Image (cartoon, rainbow, N blue to C red; front, side, top):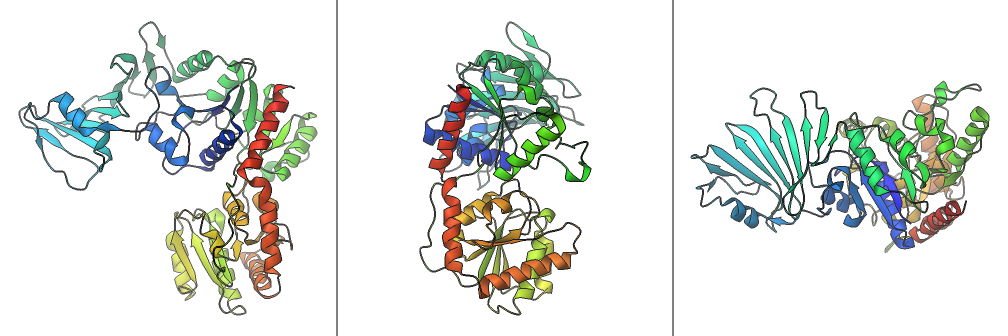
Amino acid sequence: MTVYNINLGIGWASSGVEYAQAYRAQAFRQAKIPAKFIFSDLILGNNIADLTENIGFDDNQIIWLYNFFTDIKIASSTFPLSSFLEQEELSQRGFKVQNDSDSKEVRYQSDQEALTIIPRYSDRQKQTIDQVSYVANNLLIKRDFYSYTKYATEYYSGDTKGNHVIFREFYNEDGSIAYTQHLDSNNQELFEFPQQYFYTKSDLYREMLRQLDFKATDTIILDRMDEDKQLINGPLIFAHHGQAKLFVAVHADHYDKHYTNEHQVLWNNFYEYQFTHYNDVDCFIVATDQQRQLLGKQFKHYYHVQPQIATIPVGSLSKLIKPTEQRKKHSLITASRLANEKHIDWLISAVVAARKVISDVTLDIYGAGGQAGRLQELIKKNHADNYIKLMGQHDLSQVYQQYETYIAGSTSEGFGLSLLEAVGSGLSMIGFDVPYGNQTFIDDQQNGYLLPYEEDWSNAKKERALTDAIIKTFSTADLTKFHEHSYALAEPYLTKNVAKQWQQLLKEDTHA
């Protein structure tokens, strides 16, 4: 049995879907469930293994479409610069090092060959490389890509205007060409193999699915589909999953309530295909019971069907974290992207107002994003620099325990990993009664305050609700009781417990 998890791309700054998969990989490891994670984007800015390792995947769990048809393994970049210099005989050819300062690159130049060769370090200290660029007449003409060996090369047109990739070669371990990817001026792809051609990326993807040869004991979890202009992967998986079970993971609010009424529902466009092809889906997976109940009602109401829908959290906790010293008195923390929809400006205004009653209340704001400048201005305007601080991006796993209360201004969270981490560190909670994260992790008056919310309320009214909750938290609430209840709420989300849920679901579906 293998569980195949379908994604598209990954980067250094990953989205909630990639984090959900990384947590799932953790749970699968704990439950000893064999799993593969399939990525199909062309990822050459960095070695894909460096990106997937960074978020917590094992190399042997990764399948990358462009690497799939070669015998090179997914592995981090360990190719030594010295081996490259030796292979290319740069010193014998008269290349001179131009500069080797503290940059990520080192330049070798030959006037005789009118060529500059620029290896890029993957690790400067270890002197390993992941890319080498070749520049002639100030134009990039070729670039090689390395992991433990050279796995690809791309060749450029060399045009002074609109220099672009014309083809790429993907290699086997012995250096032979596994296949060539040709690109035309519109970036349309053609894949040339020794014995055959694939005329689109979708054709190549279909061939990968065919070769994976899914068994009846296998399960496919579709996390992302059809966001790549060159690839329609969703319908391909629906058509070619063979005997394997097909699960669909829902990672966001699944419909638009503004355009939904008694007679019709407007599904989130990322899930419309999956929902309208419910007959082909063995199980839909959501992160919270509230979303499971709502989606179930909607299927029954609009389609008169009751497909299987399971709740499995997208995040998990390796352990509950107890404070190593006393929590800072009257302290608030929030953690998110600094984006409009997180409404951190409401939190700032609420804390400024609460300060008139709770004179030592503080708020630390963790995260990065486009609103940082505007939020800093708002803090300054309110002369709040000494008690409201933008803390930047950090690993918060050991930070939450220092605070008494977590506060959220967001009006929609699919799950809310920061909320989970906060209750896992025993914090009391403040947030609006909105789907789905707050309703999952805030048990009103048991571990915090779940505040009434109406979209058409004025900002002042929303801020006042937050202010009142802050004052109540630090004046009349039994914080010891709240903290204990948060730990109790977090217990089911321990990785060992989430792993059991996966085991149970996969076992049930195998015998269905």
